[in-house]
Image: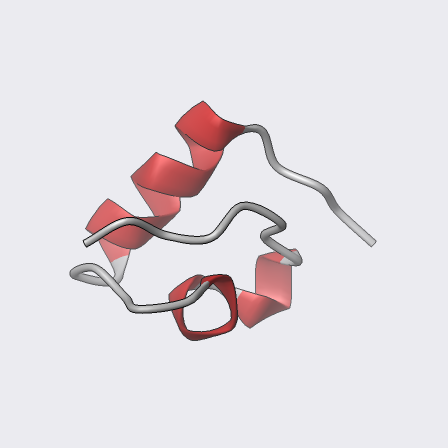
Length: 37
């Protein structure tokens, strides 16, 4: 399972237009940090 750091996580939210939870953000990348806004 891939664990992204907070910076990569934020990039992920930007790619998908934002999200409410890490699961909504990029479940396929195994994001661990909850997305903010």
